[in-house]
Length: 207
Picture 1 (cartoon, rainbow, N blue to C red):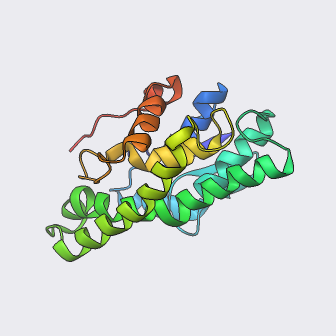
Picture 2 (cartoon, rainbow, N blue to C red):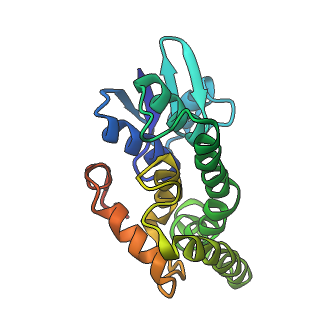
């Protein structure tokens, strides 16, 4: 299997986290997102022009959470992605929460503080920052309350849901994401940071 990825992308990291956790060997194709040529090549395999993209013997799949689910199912990893209907639905619930709510909220701040200057040369927009912070607080509170009496997001053990929610938090310090006050969320995040797969996919900030 071939994975088009860039380790600075939190979405690509989702796929990498699952692959590392499962001990899967992938042919990793690094995509330089700052290169017009490589972005054009990426569009050839993903009409959206984004990483990650998985190519499994001609079956091409994009969207990070879909790739996570595919890898887990292909590996038969029922601990990460249970087959029981309600258990799987609960994992899906938190993966969709990550993709639809939490990740976009964090993404506003990572764009304004990290990527915007690099891509456009423009300074952070205070209006956008305020909007991003408000969204982060709204969704971090949900996670914090949910994690108040549990170690993991779904069930009693680590699942894809945890990796899906944790990945966008990789820049919380650098992007000034206001989550420090959410003690249950931060305790869970520290557990995530101690996982071998997390440590194996850490990449130094290059800029």
